[in-house]
Image (cartoon, rainbow over all chains, first blue to last red; front, side, top):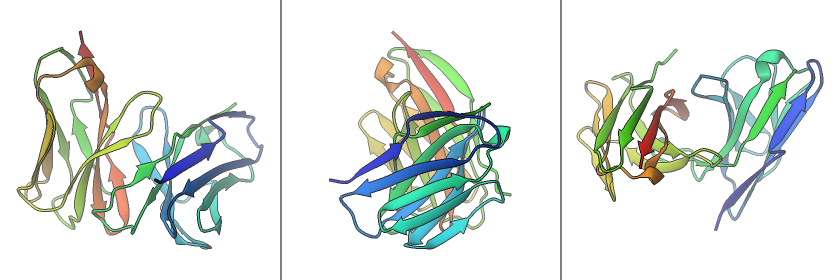
Amino acid sequence: SQTIHQWPATLVQPVGSPLSLECTVEGTSNPNLYWYRQAAGRGLQLLFYSVGIGQISSEVPQNLSASRPQDRQFILSSKKLLLSDSGFYLCAWSVLGLAADTQYFGPGTRLTVL
Amino acid sequence: ILNVEQSPQSLHVQEGDSTNFTCSFPSSNFYALHWYRWETAKSPEALFVMTLNGDEKKKGRISATLNTKEGYSYLYIKGSQPEDSATYLCAFVYGQNFVFGPGTRLSVLP
């Protein structure tokens, strides 16, 4: 069966510090991968998605970047965190990336920027 | 910017009550509508994927309907139980993009 891992589970970082969140998927090959953020009081917002190694699409201009160095690894990064980067970050995967394709979510990372 | 709305924002019901909530989305460029349940301290869990106007899906006591022409979907829970307490999210899909609504937070009181 497929599983998705995210770490760390929680993170407290000062403004201006770098960020690296990691997501890995097991039990499937060539998944579509997604990073979402839920800011306080807001809905889930798609940040990035990837259909393959090295292929990243960004949905919103922001202080963050994503990379996919391996087939089942998706990394969310920032060089300098802002207060507005605080939120709950979810990684998800799907088989084909089609509209009717279910997305399966990881356990999430709660990031607090102070 | 696409807008997906959900109502109500939150509601409290007694165990055994039936309830329903609404997801409103753009009626153009429709690809699919997803419903997820998100329990506290857990990952969002897929409930339904709906693609055709008039679709009705059911899983146990939970069911959903879809009207793509007017841009809404209803989620129904029959005989609510405390374990149904969660945030229910809908996601409107166009192309490869999922646009989530803000969710409806349901609390079922024993």
